[in-house]
Length: 365
Ligand code: FNR
Image 1 (cartoon, rainbow, N blue to C red):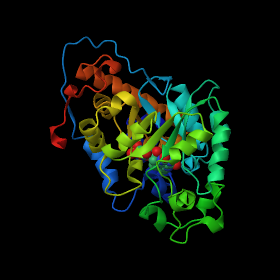
Image 2: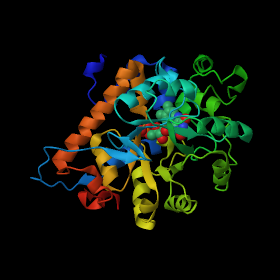
Image 3: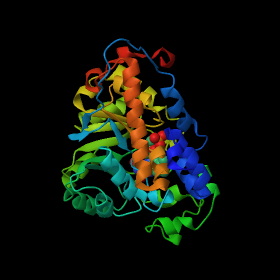
Image 4: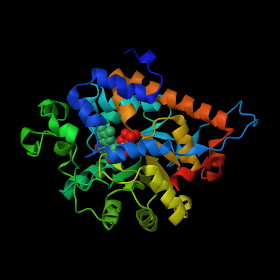
């Protein structure tokens, strides 16, 4: 379908169902086991209701904010997603270019299909990026990577992903066995394709170190000056630990339902953190991702105290339209956030962050 006919984020995932290969679709839209967590992420945003106010002069609204010291046009970043070339030949270069032209930040995945230098070069030299780290079983490889990243001034934060100690069971991905795997991701060799199935996820994630522990944050700090954000926090106890370990931030995330099936929808985790250790919001930047598909979802997350949200699959699917597709997704979201703010009676995002009085959360309590 022509790009101009796509008017919401779901349209991009549906368009990709028509144009993408079966294998790419299985990899991108798929999740673990019975998709319980995938579905919960999405439906739980829909159980939060606004408490709108009227007649508050909303002719001018601003979605501008700061995340990790970066000025951004709206509180949305593009999630790290592996092997972007499965969605289109420009892969992560389209994400980088599209993010830059819309004033938002892309978090580059460790398993990106291009080298980080090439991805950064697809945006102006002043555009900020985040980098997502999977720690390698061969720790010296991670140390080398961190050394390289420290010299890259565009990278402003290190998102250390901790929710995927082992690659989960992605059944749609495993059912389709093809050699496409080898052509889209140069680091995969025929011998690294897992015997358990042709899963792209298993093949690309086999290097991840399940021995990773909280003490390793100090080891990362010895090899990197970047502020650390722990991505994949799924409980208030771990949010508290991250704060005690002096992390710069956390991402409340269950990997878009691609890690533990049965992990709570991320909204529930955010509510748990608000209840059990509200102090974390003052000490760290708290981000959230998973199932965010509407500007109104973004607004809800901000009312619950999030500094910003990550959006994954819709951006990945938009790569099939190149950079223009990525820009379109960002513009749609921006427009939806502004409209939701106006209709809710909120002129300024910064002033309502953490103010849960804008929401009725009773369906989730
Ligand atoms: C991911 N995700 C992910 N996360 C990460 O830390 N490193 C990675 O390499 C990947 N790879 C990846 C590939 C694909 C195709 C998807 C869909 C997701 C998880 C991602 O960063 C994010 O947490 C979720 O995608 C957010 O959920 P939504 O917005 O896709 O529902």
